Amino acid sequence: MKRRLFLYLAGVAIAAGLAGCSGPQSSSSVSKKVVVYTSVDEVFAEPICKQFEQETGIKVELVPDTEETKSTGLLNRLIAEMERPRADVFWSGDPARAAILKSKGVSAAYKSPAADGLPSRFADAESHWIGFSARARVIIYNKDLVPDDKKPTSIHDFADPRYKGQACLANPLFGTTSMHAAALFQTLGDDEAEDFFQSLADNEVRILSSNGEVRRRVANGEIAIGLTDTDDVNVAIQDGKPVGFVYPDADGMGTLVMPNAAVLITGGPNSEEGREFIDYLLRSETEAALARSEAAQMPLRSDVELPDGFPFKPVTQLKAMSVDYGTLADNLEELSGGFLKQWVDKNQ
Image (cartoon, rainbow, N blue to C red):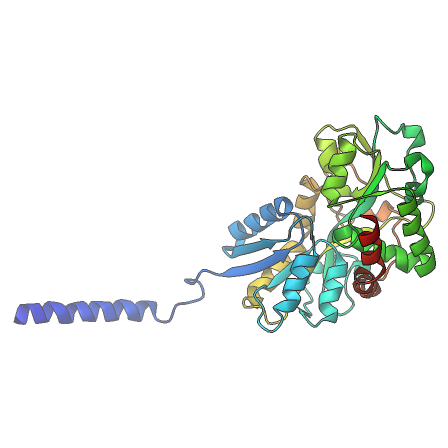
């Protein structure tokens, strides 16, 4: 009995000693994580997140959006979760959605030390989002259907009778197409922009589910021309498809440049890790990695070395539309519930 009591007390003492050594679990012994919502294609975002995990030991819980509701699905979710945030960071594929989050009070200001060298024109003046690595809107065309000497040069060519029923764009209620539509209203004015969309309907322009579908249909020769993003064009080029592309309206209003945007969520459960993840996104090394990826995103920094055979111009050499992303975001919300919704419902 005494022996059993001694062994029991010894066991308690050892257990207490071990508990005393570990004490309250230190931050290093607890598995750190960061919850990242992203409207960037998962195939492009995941390698960056994996590298971040390897370098920092912080687990990334990545929540991607769907292709068809790109940006809007997670945007609405972030707004709905505002009182009890689940995300720490929103890695947006464009700044319009980031600006909407600011207007709704969802985002927090964060001036990252890693933003040095990134142009301020692609950032929020109050540090609620910062842009990095951009895509641009382009016209993709099938070279078997459209000779190079007759390739389209303007978005207004989508209303040209020679492309009647042979032009396409993604649903303008979603993704970068919605942002492009809002930019056209900001640049052209309401009347001219509405006339433009009516001319598309008159020319039987096809409304497809996504930019990826635009790329697929044009690359396969089902449709002659389409409006899409540079990353989708690069996928077709890498697949050896007979496609070419044009930066529209290079002699006029220019094309829409769409940087990624890093957003810190107010009251996120892992804010410290969220800041660390944003710092990682904004590094020049991340811009270089995204340029090397299948997305072939264009660095905003002028000193980032481009990979051999990079198909796109540096952002500094593009004729970019002059837009205010905050105003664009306001217009986007109004248009998505008004003119654009009516236009899609009537013509889809």
